[in-house]
Amino acid sequence: MKITSICCIGAGYVGGPTMAIIAQKCPDIKVTVVDLNIERIAAWNDPDVNNIPIYEPGLSDLVAEARGRNLFFSTEVDKAIDESQMIFISVNTPTKTYGLGKGMAADLKYIELCARQIASVAKDNKIVVEKSTLPVRTAEAIKNILDNTGNGVQFQILSNPEFLAEGTAVQDLQNPDRVLIGGNNSPEGMEAINALVEIYANWVAKENILTTNLWSSELSKLTANAFLAQRVSSINAMSELCEKTGADVNEVAKAIGMDSRIGSKFLKASVGFGGSCFQKDILNLVYIAKSYGLNEVADYWEQVVIMNDHQKRRFANNIVQTLYNTVADKKITFLGWAFKKDTNDTRESAAINVADYLLFEQANIAVFDPKVRKKQIIADLSYLNEIDVNDFKKNIDAFEDPYEACKNAHAIAIMTEWDEFKSYDWKRIYDAMQKPAFIFDGRNILDAEKIKAIGFIFSAVGSSN
Image (cartoon, rainbow, N blue to C red; front, side):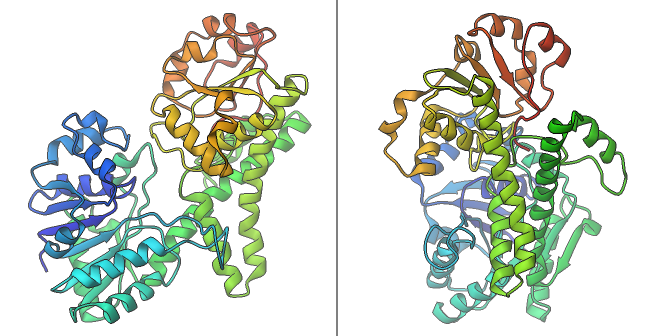
């Protein structure tokens, strides 16, 4: 089957970049990204590609190249579904905040809505591709909805989880370690799998395209994120022990990272992991394990999240204790709010939890992030607490100039490892701070000896992986 028309439902952090790459690499395929969010689609269509809603290095250039040629962004969901042979589902699957599985299970209401809309609109056979991170056997539920509420057409369901990392999404999509495609081993299922394989084969070597059954594909995504997050929590657990014993966690990480069996990636001590995937996927894995009565398995993986939460509280406590056990009415500057560098995504950012703790202690928070504005910061804190923004709005401000953000600060917490922070005039920043002045950073963004020479106190924690 030769695919000439693709639709992607969901214009977010996965759908937008993924479809931009497919459009660039496959100029003979019409790619339409649809979303009900009018404001988001308008941003994707902004004549100035620097204003697209997702910040990723290199993404604006990709969009500029393909948009209007074979890449389109639209709110006309039904039209795009009707005209497409292959439909990617790339909508949000947050952790449930209600009912059975609250706090752990994935909320699949948006997935179900997509399936029902596809079923009601489709007039010919479609291939439906799960791109969102989903619990095992979700494809079975999607298939049941499509077959029982549709117009009698045939649907093939594929699982094609994303393995991109925000901040390097374009590079990850252009040069993936592997592409994973799961489907049924029936003749029709294999035909659908091969159709998607041929799309990726335009730029990915076929030996790097792995085909599996549906359930293996779905579980592989959760497992990969769980393993990566486990490494972060493991080194963070060791960072606390290092502080008590006088060891240097960076030296420990380097030593064990040189072991070829372990490797050096995801061994940076930090405030903890953030982003939309790790915690959500681990809690989903915990819920699945518990649903099968595998309580020891569930407890093992849940401890990764518990350690991550502990690290964020510990970092906030360290700030309070260093500032003589009170931060009331003191200015604490956050450099960085996004959960990692080179992205404007703030979901599950450690900065949100640390700021929440310090605001509870009546601190005044000043924030500078190259890509995040005050509106988003206030929204993040409001969502975390489900309280009126006016309760804390007077205690938090955002700046467009890092030097203004740091002026008269009692302490600076480097929450995101933006590369530009390395080039700042730190002597100028230090001179403008309240004395004694403190800086909290665990990623060695600054030269430690120079910092010590001008009186900074260095802690052993820093920004998100």
